Amino acid sequence: MKILINKDDLIEPLLAVCGVVERRQTLPILANILIDAESENIRLTATDMEVESCFVMQHQSEETGKTTVPARKFLDIVKALPDNKSIELVIENEKIKILCGKSKFTLSTMSADDFPAIESLDEIVRIKLAEKVLKKILENTQFAMAHQDVRYYLNGLLIELDGEKIRAVATDGHRLALTESDLSTGLTDLLQIIVPRKGVLEMSRLLTDEETEVELVISKNHLRLITEKQSLTTKLIDGKFPDYERVIPQDSNKKVYAEREKLRNGMARTSILSNEKFRGIRMVLEEGKVIASANNPEQETAEEEIEVMYSGETMEIGFNVSYLLDALNIIKSDQVLLELKDSDSSCLITSPEDSSSRYVIMPMRL
Image (cartoon, rainbow, N blue to C red; front, side, top):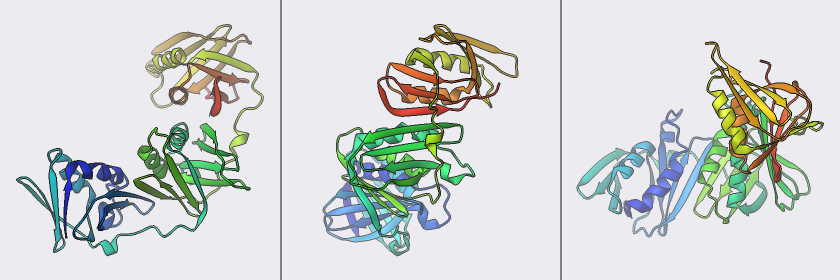
């Protein structure tokens, strides 16, 4: 089998699918990508058995066939070749030759018949939404997912659908991020799925800020994202997500309005001398200001006075400054609103201009 293709046409699909390939695999073939040449297109597929990424590019091929090639080596070779040059791929005798100008590479291949495929989806629901809407929902929440937590259901993102909304929620047990958007789904019952961390990150990576419509296909065990050129299928986490609504403070009586950039910069400066392990800072609320302070085991201290709109009683509370900064970095509005009750209760952070995203941070004892 021979394929003649321009380097610039091949590099985008390769970059799109190779992110799924793990550097350490349980099966040797999982280090490979599947190349499937049909008469009018070439399909590239990569999988780690949990997430499958597939990219289809239009390409006229005189010969058809399929094989698998080592993903990282193939990508590195193609990236290193000169731009806008033709590449000839010759596949024979369990080898693939990559020819470009005076460059020649030979890689071992493995049989396409051994390449694992995710089974066909028995879909429960199929919905369409703007690409930029889904990207915003994922990016506004994914930072709060747990990482390698023994509570496996926290190592992912809850996507919740009802008849009128799509909502995403992530929590690691110390903080929570929630974003929702209006969406007519046609559902009569509430549907909840938990998408694993890697699936969320790969989905976020392939989405753009365009208005183009994408499809979400949900089955009992899988979620598939379909764009114009690419599809990404991820297994779902089988578990029950915590009741996130109980975590969102409802009775906060202290409201702090602040300029987001001023508050973020003040917290970032204070964090420089916080304890590197626990990242704790102390916040004292006073009339018209917040005083942020931090110290570390070397007896070094930092203090920052930040002007805010606050007129309640004086209150002191501690937070992990990294969690605060993550929320302030995600919010895009000029103003932020912090709602608090007392030093033992969680803080709710929102934008006064847009209540579709909410961030909850548990306090720390310092």
